[in-house]
Length: 460
Image (cartoon, rainbow, N blue to C red; front, side, top):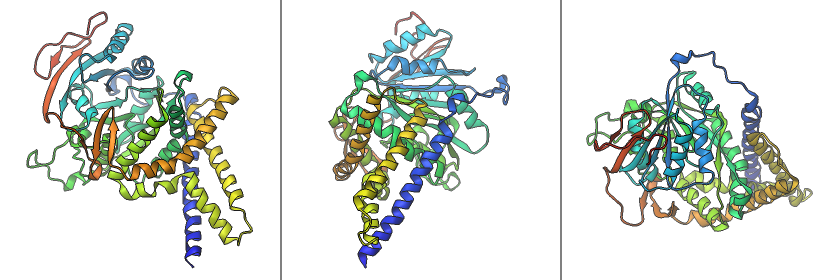
């Protein structure tokens, strides 16, 4: 009897798995396939009424294709924006790249924030604190340093954010870019994952809109909204609105204790402010550098452990959303229910071919270009198969641990997605040498010290 129950449950689960996958595929075709051929309408809003945007780029070290990544922010087709580069250390080599771009685009409004304000464990939040405060526009576009976008992205994103009320976040699906020189084993596995299964599920979950599902590669939101959130997931109307210490910490410091600050910001805007999200039609093209097989495993394990600390039940069920385990359960269930007349191996083979076909088309919709050669196609399929087969072993490795390696520093995951540094931590609530330089603006610093202006030909 129990075998029959398991068999029927497996069929039902597979139906859900397959329908969600089809939804992600359908939405990928609908959203992205023709996006490059869709003209931008400039007639809806007069140019004088268009809201300005502060683009915040948190930087640390040198990323693959960093010059090209950052340059795409300078070339946005939008009438009113500023760029704020936030860097923790004044000797960071990324500053040379920033200076080259400032020299090339002197007409672009650029500020540089050097230093960090320690408000929690999350280094990205600490890095962004000053930039968040000095931004002169309410709309913020936070975009990672390893991401590049097309020139129309900002215009389309602002239109999505402002075209109707009730929108709190506009975000973009990540899409991996890999050059031939960086095509290590781990890099190819990561590319296959991001451009197929991850993208398909990310798009599907945002289409279902049951709950917030946001990654922090490229997000637009309003500073006035962020300043209200407390990361409690309790509607704002039911919260204690007194200021700290009698009330909760609000704003960016409220999410500085989490590893996945992007997800927490999205959840807070969704649950506390009651604002929805829009997954827009552009992609956040993520330039991947050389990644070893071990680095790939550790990266995937890190995010499984982060999710486990935040949403344990969903993380435990994750293997059932992967094509290998779902296919094995379904094919064996079908064989059992047919009394052995249907071959489980044949069913699994058909299932895997269908999933592969869908995933390849998702990748094509996001890229808008086919593979450049049969060799590239074959290599990608091998990486896809390897990724699918490795998903469950990596999950087993990750689910029994709590330690993560985050930019060379070890952390320990706690309950509710919070994180603590394994070694001793620094000062909390105090700025570290935070200074601001600007192009075409009066300079100011967090300690009122004067910083040199960031101008073409001016030394940083």
